[in-house]
Image (cartoon, rainbow, N blue to C red; front, side):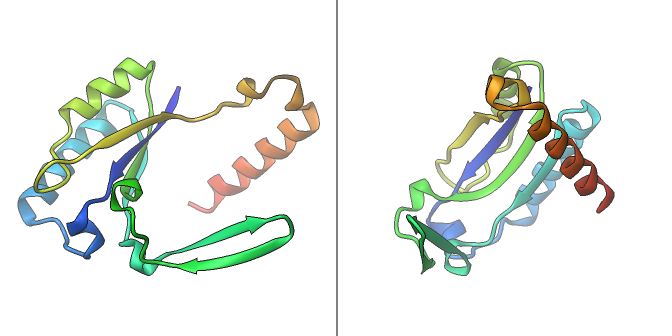
Length: 141
C-alpha cells in the first residue's frame, strides 16, 4: 500500500521561514530510517504558496489564480510518498517523525489509489497505457 504523507503548512512556512539546522538534521535522520526500512519512495519540501498558482476549471474555461492562498491550514508545506503494509504502519511512522514546525503542526495521511481500486473501468488498454507511462517516468531518473 502506498500513502501520501502531507505536512501541513503554517504561518512560518508560508512566510518562507526555512527550518533550522537542528530540524534539518532530525528530519535527515528520520528520512534515513525510512529509506533503510524500504518505506520512503519520495519526499520533498514545498515553496510557500506565494510562489504557486491554482488553475480553476469551469467547463472548458480555465482561470489562473496566483498565490499566496489565504487558508494556511489547508496548504501543504511538504510531502512523502511511502510504501507500507497498512494505514496503521503509516500512522506509526508519522508518530516517530520530528515535529516539522516550531509549534503545533499536523501531518495528514492519505492512501494512494492502486490500479485494482478502479475495477472494471480500468480496462486492459488503460492498464497498458499506465504501465507504459510509469516505465517512461522511471527512465528519467
